[in-house]
Length: 406
Ligand SMILES: Cc1cc2nc3c(=O)[nH]c(=O)nc-3n(C[C@H](O)[C@H](O)[C@H](O)COP(=O)(O)OP(=O)(O)OC[C@H]3O[C@@H](n4cnc5c(N)ncnc54)[C@H](O)[C@@H]3O)c2cc1C
Image (cartoon, rainbow, N blue to C red; front, side):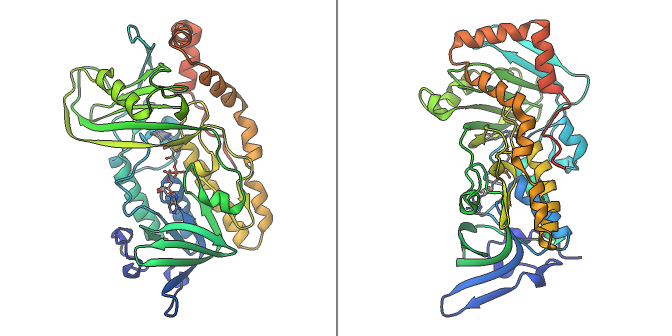
């Protein structure tokens, strides 16, 4: 049993403990160039949910895996609220100690916030992940399986099967038969492999702080206000332990920038009455691809997972469920390709998956059209009717998620 201590927390890869596949991650130092060369079956770029999941599964299947992450920690650069939906919680094993209390209630507001529509579910619908510890737990599992995680290591380019990176120890080359682009919405790997790239993006920003339980049960508050969140929503998630106050929208449509919109919303955000704030405020932000899964997400040299593949619901902007599903599917395909069946890559077909997103893409276009408070009020009036509420419940509490890629 390899030491499950956080090997990855040491930014110096030379100090890494050895996992089960370590002997196959060969390392050569060229004294003449001082550029180290590592080799592995698979290089995974990016240690978010997608890269950590794919790395663990590939290592469990016996492949030597190097996971390169540009940041020097996994905990200080979280870019997600971390709301996991019921289907994800049912289908995937996530460490329970990294999940907040269940949420069954959603409150929807028009721009003036003078009314609200509350939707209640009989089931636990959402739980918010404590994402830093969750990433660390997933990294530990990947290391135990044999993956080698190099923090502070930025992928910078590719020539054939030789990938270049910068690391805390200087330049690094990694020789790998296959590369997995888990490097987020603006994927450099996608560019270098000549695969499709995300063009339609929202940006999101939020503040997170600890909070005491208030009078109301855990609730997800959503405000439809294009002046605060153009093309999307402003939100407060208060699960009685933490509150997330955020806005997202099309970057060019924020009248005074997203940070100003967040400040404005934060000053009057709903759902925090009666709860006491404590501790520091953590700030998170990042791009969210909403153009639907990309068509070309695989080539004989590599493939894309998670945000890099555009695997995000275009309507809700939820990416955690698609990210986990695609990152579990990708290792099957890579496994076959590395065992001499490159035709398996044809199964990793974004164009085929994309056809199942038509409805959600149409609804995204409709939401993007809500440009003025008057239009938001009209949309809210629709949501206040019984059919409107039934439709909102189907979207928020439904059983549909990312289509099964298998
Ligand atoms: C503000 C915000 C809130 C969100 N809230 C939710 C939510 O509540 N629920 C939900 O389902 N979805 C949510 N999403 C979407 C969801 O978070 C993402 O879809 C998901 O986290 C994507 O995971 P990923 O691993 O593909 O990408 P990321 O988490 O972005 O990970 C990519 C990793 O690659 C690394 N990287 C990038 N380039 C390089 C390089 N050159 N070399 C080395 N490393 C590199 C990055 O540092 C990063 O660690 C939210 C998104 C945002 C921005």
